Image 1 (spheres, helix red, strand yellow):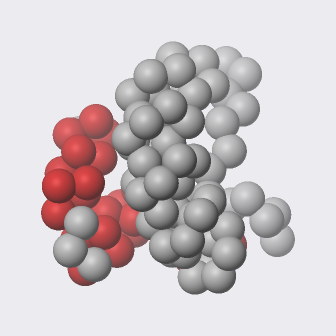
Image 2 (cartoon, rainbow, N blue to C red):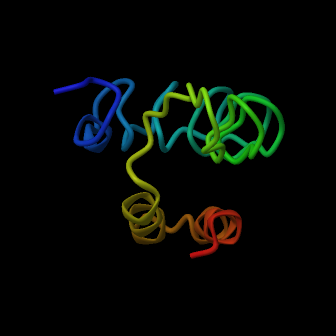
Length: 98
């Protein structure tokens, strides 16, 4: 099993996609999956999870090297909604056309 791909992202412990602490997919602070600042999962600028350019989480072009600890988007959206993160779920749906 590759450690940076599903199902590891379903992990609720440190660094996991469903972890609410620092570095986790549900963390709202710097570097977290729900962080909207530089490097965060909901950041739309370079290096962010919603950035559509090279090295961004929404980039699907040649040389895509973005690594994420967030579960696949449809699963992550369901988890966000279940936990009350409605605004964040809507933002992801908007950027990924769900």
